[in-house]
Length: 408
Image 1 (cartoon, helix red, strand yellow):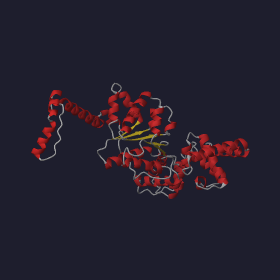
Image 2 (tube, rainbow, N blue to C red):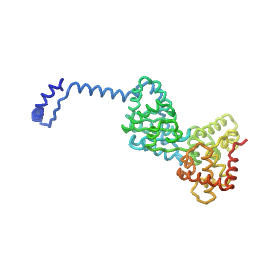
Image 3 (cartoon, one colour):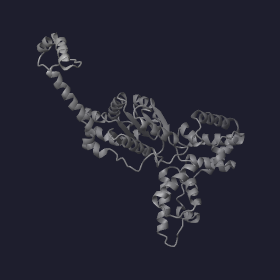
Image 4 (tube, rainbow, N blue to C red):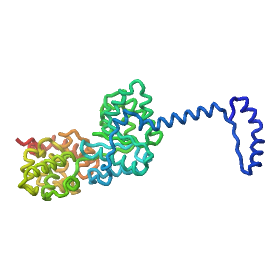
């Protein structure tokens, strides 16, 4: 190590001889190199800065307060899997096994209360358990936006701190819509992380292309990875969820299987609705000393007036009305049968979902036995044509619509 260029050039003239002399004296192969003291100092400073950037996420007061807590009980093991959520669960697990290598970014979308946040927590828990050295940051998009205002005078510092993590999990990315500065900073953070092969997982209430108000380049980046959807739990999955929650909440609770089926059939719009129904029943049982078991009459009495099957229009209420009109079972409407009458009813149900609800073809397809969005699109177009040419279709659809109107 020398102090100036002249010394380096002079020593370089004799470097070969010095290497040979040292190799002979030490009896090992020796490779010599002359470096400037100033270069060593710069390298040392760079290493300090990089070290500070890596550790700054953990030491930053704002991020310590706004990062979402990683709750140990939200894991892949206790995530109830069914037809409605098997794909996003598998994708989340794959992203956890080798962060940054597969499905990057991973984009999970679906309505509130269907398990998207649980999957983010499960990813964080799995990665932390397998490699505690990896820096995992879980935060909501609203908190990310708050950071833009907090670091208004030093946004590069904010960006660098976020770009220093190994796994970035962001919940409700749709909150960035219409926020130009937030879009810009997130775009830069996103690019930095992807270029360094760091894992990004995003959740939203809708797919990338339907997130109005997000910059086109962000939507394009989100669509470049894997996009998966989670939908309302089907009956069988709802039953599993209810039983799982009963085991955790009240192991000694005596509840009839018929009540479990009743809740699964009428309160499985999302997990929170299921929890609400269960909490109502448990609370009412505790406050009814003479009652020792939750049976179906008791459930009807407690939940009377709270049954939301027809309080608001959902895919489930539309399917229920179509089944009632045509006298079909749930399995027939959602199954693989190609019988013309069943197919017709199924197509009408899909058409009505698209007509009355703000849902995508993918979401409708998921609710009808994981059918492809092109199948749903074709069905909707077919029924739309038939309504215009066959008055019987129009009459049938009007009668079905009367069935799912709010009950008075």
